[in-house]
Amino acid sequence: MLPINPEIFKAYDIRGIYGEDFDNELARLLGLAYVELRKTDHDYVPLKKIKVAVGADMRLSSPELKNFLIKGLTEAGADVMDLGTISTPTLYYAVGHYGLDGGITVSASHNPKQWNGFKLVRSKGIPISGETGIETLRDLVMKNNFIPAVIPGEVSINTEVLAAEISYALSFVDKLAIKPLKVVVDTANGMGATYVEALFAKLPCELIALNFSLDGSFPAHEADPIKDENVAELKSAVIKHQADLGIAIDGDGDRIFFIDNTGEVIPQPIIRGLLAKLFLEINPGARIGYDVRPGQITVDLIKESGGVPVMTRVGHSLIKEQMLKDDIFFAGESSGHFYLRGEAGCFEYPSIIILKILALASETPTGLADFVQTYKKYLNSGEINRVVSNKDTVFAAILEKYSDGKISKLDGLTIEYPDFWFNVRASNTEPKIRLNLEAITADVMVAKRDEILDLMK
Image (cartoon, rainbow, N blue to C red):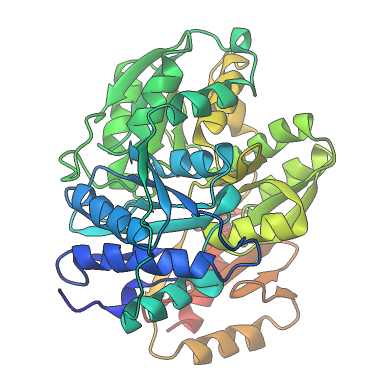
């Protein structure tokens, strides 16, 4: 057994380099630890069989890791529903739809091919984060003091969940409202291809598929659409095919970016605000979440649509936990995660998000580029990372300089003025500080961006 690097147990999931930070045995130990963790939860019923959904992405190491994970879970006495090779949102949906006690998927999301890991949830897809169980799992795994169950669990195979997930997504739109659009989708050889193919088979749209073959070596490009170089092929294809819309999806299928008909990325704050508007039609007056990274147009659209804007921290597990606590119906994150409190639980429903944007695009006769232009009211710096020698010193300097602004310490520092606003957050794993700033004019954005970057030196 390869020694386990405890640093792979992170704030939102478990993730590291396979064959360097861990090997297959970690997966077996994690299965044993997961069952022990769930037996300490308030909803555990003694003598009840725990039933856990398990899935995996297309990474080269995922099949073996899934097999060892199932071995550990069944050794601990849990019954396992094996979902096969699926997206992360499909695993979440399965847990809630079938009323299971939890789920684990083998995936390293958008990380390079040598990485792998695990995302874990409780019942109804409630995330297990660093603060709510991952640290406990780490301690249990490192101690490795497990006693197998007297009666091992059983394994069943489920191949029906994707159809159920797509059927549920389609209930959110009138299919007749979706026109025969031409849509280019790049799934980066990742898991988004599974639900996109199933969804578009039910729609009148023409699907132009880029990099749909599941391949854990990522032959086309890295599966992280937040980087410009990873959407270059998609942008070109949208222009080449004169498409109405482009969609980029990350490796495990839980993050989405949209490209307009001119081949430009639609800013996430605009997409998030438009989606908020659409979901407020379903649930008028609802609370809508948005993360601390600046995107004022989101807040504008929530208020204009009669919703209540609620700022959240950054990170999928933290946002979902806040949504449940603060009764938030829909939330969007700048990284491309979109969350909904749906029938099966509170998590990402990418098929619903795609359908909503397709319906919106069907209502824009001159194209999405013209439509979203009116919402480009603010100038955004994008996320800027700087290596610093002392994070605390930098934060103190920023707090002193901008002490007369409206200050929030929800996640890093968010400071607002009438003509600009920004957030600075420290990286959990690197000596870096991340700056995101927005302003009402380009001149103010550049001036204040450079002013803060000087302080960060």
